[in-house]
Image (cartoon, rainbow, N blue to C red):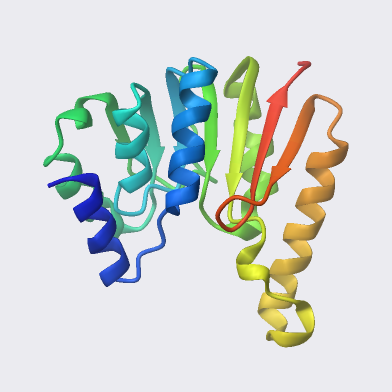
Length: 189
């Protein structure tokens, strides 16, 4: 199996994965910044973990959904790069184990929990490391065109973007790549 066929599989099953634009962005970013150790929050079927492993990274990746855990394991077994991936089959919100330190943390999970994930895993980021968050535009939905639940999610994402822009220990750049991406560089402890 190739990453292209895994991407086609994800699209056929409506499994959200990183866009081609985000894939290319991450590839260039990983190589330019010599990223070696990555923590990913939100494995899904394993596409982005396999992509980053193909760029030469060692990945630890969280997934809490039982079906997705099995799908990811099945896909990891089909790739040589899987030896660089450690699947952590736990909810990242409640996980208490030791993880090590990372050059990059990639957050692509429950959008309403982005700030919680950011704060919980910031201590595992090496000085000068990066936290990348995907899907910050959330399909360019506007509050007046969605239900009450989605309005709440949009408010949380807006508050999270303000949190990133004002964080005293990070310098954040927002990109119109894919469905919106932020890159936050840790500049202080």
